[in-house]
Image (cartoon, rainbow, N blue to C red):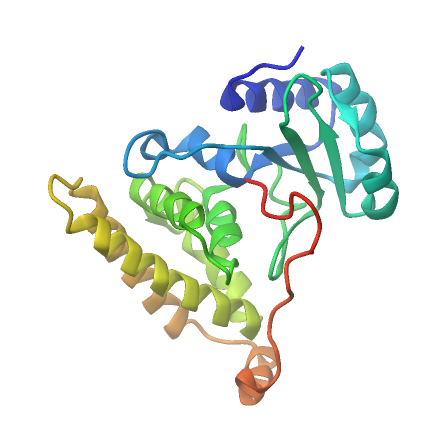
Length: 254
């Protein structure tokens, strides 16, 4: 039987995956709320419709038996069409969906996390969670809330003890498209956090978010760029630098 509480359910799924030798970690909004107390209280608290995960493609054959044993029903049609990169599993007791990416978090860009699945116990690392939110060009309020919660509750660090600046720099400094999207969305997130910080009775920690985004943007501006990055930067916005999110049901899950 599945658990109604999405956070406890995510914990249950990850624990079962670990026990079965399946490389799987939570991602998306639920994952952020698992490691960010701020995501569970106003003004950053929100509702969660689905639970997102990332799994190692090497464990793909074990995913269906794992989720069936946990009480889920595979989405046969979707999985047949998209199963090499993504799987859906329905919770028959509710409208909730377990959305499982393979190797990469897919959105406006591809974030390869196959080597990042063993870094943290429950979720992909904070830097990767932040990148997964800052790659969403069609940013909505839940994306802003999630990104602000991460930046409020986690220091910017040089390793995975916090939000790993080296990881974000590595992704963005070798790919101009990633850099362009992340800097655009980070600036929007700064404005969102700044607006929250000016409200009456606002948590002073929101001011820290603004400072951390300023530091992140400075770091991305100054980071040495790859030859590939520089060549693509010459073309700039004349050519689209990002993908459109998949036009499929649940594409905005998490």
